[in-house]
Length: 488
Image: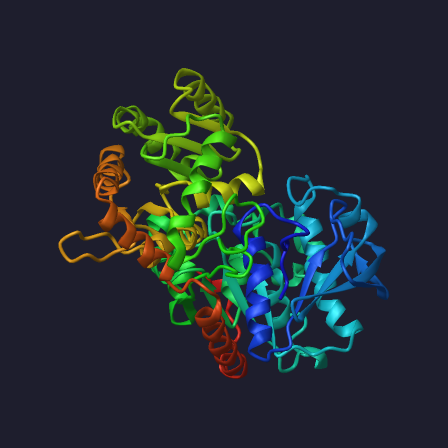
């Protein structure tokens, strides 16, 4: 596997969580899994068992011989190889946001391929994650197609979020060694035909493609969710699959989470109550056990439904609820939440920061967990919330639709409250339904129990990935090379 992120070494979102969990589940199934990541300057290996300097080599890149150093760490039954280079990697404390990111991730992806050669390890499948690795399938089908090391190697390209595609100028053609084939005509935007798009190349050249939920795999075939690549995805539809993300149920375990005031399980729900009081105290809200406490752990961004939250919040507060929000993001939302917390100190708490301990406390202490996303490829928050006994309110999109069955009081079914239109009235309607049932303790407890009993582990998804790897190998042997001139 090749990825720009890996928890706990480098993380901005769910990609890092997947890379920390999926390889472990695959290793339990007997697969030999190795993960390649950059060793950014911020990576901290303190306390980690590692093998430093397992190999060194020079990589010809951008007119220079770039020295590469490889370190390895063993985690949960699989090996993580950290790729280090002073010019592009270790002198950069951040993951993204540099003017030369196109060249940086071209270098990393190329170094990851060379690492397999240097370590004399011939993978059956190279599993590439998101745009940062999109050139690897391209190389495997073009410049490296006759390389003996990769003669039988297939590629799987996973789209974690199609919105982030890696758009760069055409200078990347030269540094990537792909200049002879030229740029790919953009399927819907002529103005982007002179732009080098990493994501498009991963989609076009990978033997198999997948997204992180079945619903999202269908959504990105449409103009509404395809971010201008839907024609290319429709061309690859037979090779496009949706595999739902899981969560690491050992890491996310309310019976053992070190950040909780009280440990509990589905069989001991009475022990959950102290966590609500501890959360209220931690964020300076009045300790009121009977008041419904709503929680959010999110990026403060428009597509996460912040506009819906802000429009609905006066009506939610009128119902007597409390709200705690943890996250950072767009300044306008950060400021709005701070102002609301000042205006409603007994009902609203805004923690504008990263804070893993507080995140655990919100999952364990909130009664209702809000995810009113405009789009959500999979979402992990709703899975963690259910695991911890917080009932989700979600919009029916992407993985939220795949994982949260709407509560039906008549049949006593469902694990959360679902609304369909991206609309503040519909969102508030779902919250109001949740608040009404919250007042019926027996019914509410059964919803919590159904959510906590849901299997959100990686076991089923890991088996699906193993099957997809086998299909990718078959495709690798039979699928013709794509025609760049007609790609559309």
